[in-house]
Amino acid sequence: ILGGCCGTNADTIVAIRKAVDAVSDIADISPAENSQDLLCNARRITAIDRNDLPEAITPEDEDDFPDEAADMAEEYGFALVHLRHERDALLVLDAVPFFSFPIAVTGDEKAISLFRRRYTGKTIILSENA
Image (cartoon, rainbow, N blue to C red; front, side):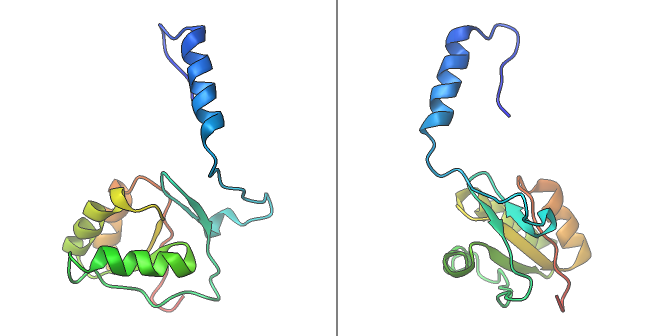
């Protein structure tokens, strides 16, 4: 949903419409999709298959994590990340603005809580044995 505020005029609305029409990668999600299985970030909506989940990656190395996450997302459309503690959550949160794919998480309850409060998308929390 896009819009304006007081001071928005017809030219602004026309410019917003043109910008929206210019976006070519709008997700096509069927109404039949279970919203509990949808992840999103600012760039992508992805439906997960809970019967075909990748093994979660752990952000142990801040230099390797973005590449590992991108490799997983290339195959699955998202990255599944195991958060062991709040430091892991912060490391992931530092990286996600540069990701074109959404994140699902598993792991420590406090770390997940921190991640959910700061993540600007819809994530899915998966149990250890999901």
